[in-house]
Image 1 (cartoon, rainbow, N blue to C red):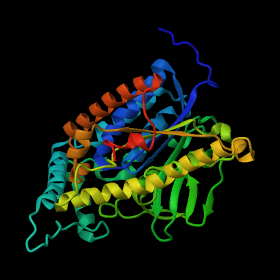
Image 2 (image 1 turned 45 degrees about the horizontal axis):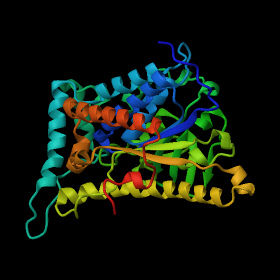
Image 3 (image 1 turned 180 degrees about the horizontal axis):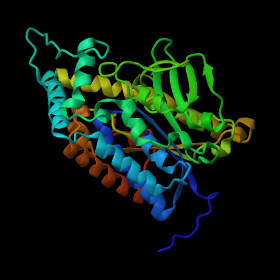
Length: 392
């Protein structure tokens, strides 16, 4: 069946933001898969932007890389779907040694979560410092034990997953990519922006924020948890940790540009950190889980709430110059089923087993398929109400 040719000027422009959250991002793999397939099969909207932080950055990058035109390949939705899913299939524990290593790592976090406090004190499971000789010695031995280098070396994994990154035809790139990271020494909130590579946005530093060109090192920086990796050093631009501390994911840059015709009509946030909990966290594991979720959510809400404020100003001043210079952006949320969100724990963010990944990916596809069908009929909500599982 041949799809009718859509008038791009009439299609809604949509940007999709992917939160970070370790292996819980497998849910986002399913969601992005359905979003991309909807574009291919129905052509009901135009995907003008992707953004992500940490594991969400890996999802956004893989989809974007498949869409990006490169030497020898024009890029396509099919490439994006294949890249995204193939990458996550290779990201999980595949060999016997990786399965054992995953069981030990995930098991250590589970032990910490289930420890019973003695006299109100519970010692955490000892960790390894990625700068120590012990850590480096263990890492050096892993390949000889049957652990693939891409399993534990993020830079190597990204280079293998994006072999033609250097041949991207930047002037022809249609979808913008934003990757969030945190510069450690100077404390800069950092966005690696494909528009800088394209030449439509300058490299810039604004007080404690900076915008840099998109690189694979920038994506690695976004996923650098200091307990697992040394800070990602980008020559001339600093040392980086995970973007969870600053933007999860970055969205402000989508609406801050001078050309309003490039601003998306809608921003869809794929949320894997639940906004609400069923009750007050009391156990060590629950407290740790909730702390991690709050870090990621509260930084995001500051940006989303600013978008809502701009929408209010646009409505108030729509007949004045401000209203002419800015357009309203509808923010929407796509999130896990409430039962799934309640049952997942901080430790499961480190569970790289194939079954767990496929379970979350399947839920992401099912949720997104239903959500997209309802969106097309005008039957989905909008932020902030749709970010809640229950009424406040």
